[in-house]
Length: 117
Length: 117
DNA sequence: TCCATATTTCAAATATCGGTGAAATATTGA
DNA sequence: TCAATATTTCACCGATATTTGAAATATGGA
Image 1 (cartoon, rainbow over the protein chains, first blue to last red):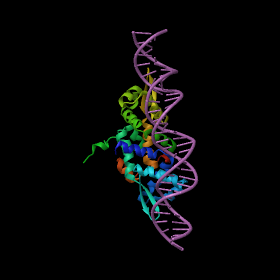
Image 2 (image 1 turned 60 degrees about the vertical axis):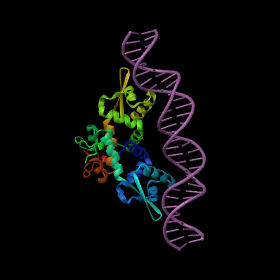
Image 3 (image 1 turned 135 degrees about the horizontal axis):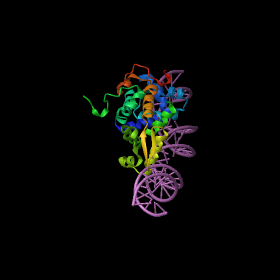
Image 4 (image 1 turned 30 degrees about the vertical axis):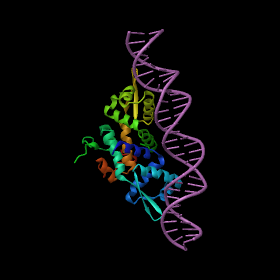
């Protein structure tokens, strides 16, 4: 993932309500949750939530689809994984001290820009 | 790591110059780099850099020490690892799709709040 | 002491973000 | 069509963030 997209994702996640949205949606996978249900779960106004959802969607961290009169939002796990992988592999060069905190193996070189076949 | 500290860290990292600072410092480990050298490496003004360094330090991602007339900044790898671990384990519940992107094993439960002995 | 180097602090200007509530849009069902 | 539901859009406002450049602080050497 390119750094500019990582930056957008980090900005999107760097907000209390928005990080909670991600936490709420990840375990639901592709089923996702309707905007109204998210607003109720987090106790935020509909218009406020809509603003935050659009930030997350613009960053590529959420997808949305219409279902009847609802709009269902779901976490894009590949995008989330891409952000984490960037931090681990490209930003932090798979530093052993950092990997130790994540339960990761530090030996193999997983950096993304190698584009292995 | 508590969510409020993760949020501070994400805010700190969600900026072009600041993410570059982290990328520059991680491979140097505890040796770190003087503020002036960082400013030169990134092509930013001294006062602008000082602002960004203080943001990163306030978030706990950098440490600083004085050495003669220099101030040496170094990445706090444990803090960085803590942020990544939070995203992976607590935010994303070690979701298999997300782990797949990072080269991680998704089976073991690594959630931080279990506080294993 | 005096000067040069290294860094931070400060204030002012600008830009961006986030919250609020009303209005607009879209969909469904009576 | 009408009313109810679900969501987004909009304008406004205050709070934060960022940049800039000048001034302040601290250190080391001549």
